[in-house]
Image (cartoon, rainbow, N blue to C red):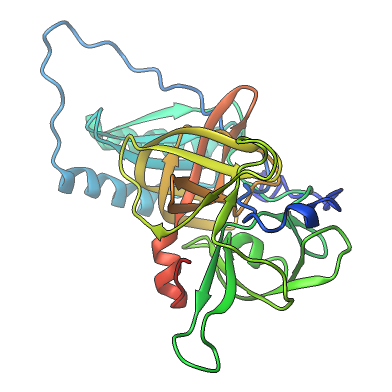
Length: 322
């Protein structure tokens, strides 16, 4: 496809007031509009028809074939256990020969897969706004973490954000043009979508997610543990652009094909997000679940958003919550 998943990137704007709210972990979604995949149109089955029953190995084999033959930018897929199918999503940039290729591959998989279209482009969520600021781009802080069990690095302070944010910015501030508070130490993107930023300034870094006034001024959710998301789980996501929104987990181990490459193992949700929310926190109560990666739609029409699970990021960097 011609459009790039980074098309939502914008120069940072505004945000001096962030310093007053910095004690709350900035869990924000990034880049472009987040959610609103058009609903899949499925042919009705006759009354009493037996549901499809494909084994997980059969569906995994279908996903493998999609990875081999249809890893087209602007597409995503996830196994939907409710449908016993692999649901493949194609955004409006997938046209012509690429759409024909996708249809050909999916057709070859028979009833194990289906295609649905979205009305908005699939993109990463990095954009301008108040969150964590680099030289050109703004993202959101996901979770504060610590590293080191022995002196002199006992409890060294870091935070997690999206890998595609770490890929484009080396240093971060808590306001546009403000003093540096952190430096990107490592990132993984594509493949995964997580980054580790080391605090370089003595600023508060509690294990909390900013609720953006949801519970009144200064509201925050304490984060005490990391957990795996589960199908149907009720979740919330906090972002610097759109605040806190709620929804549920609609898929696990999702694959998303960004222009820059493929990211696998993502959490799919029906929670909306918009530009500037990248890297923000997906959570359930005091449980950290994921970091905002990308999606399609917005918080007016709704949509679909994908998250990098947080536990693989913790394991990759040897850090912990809190």
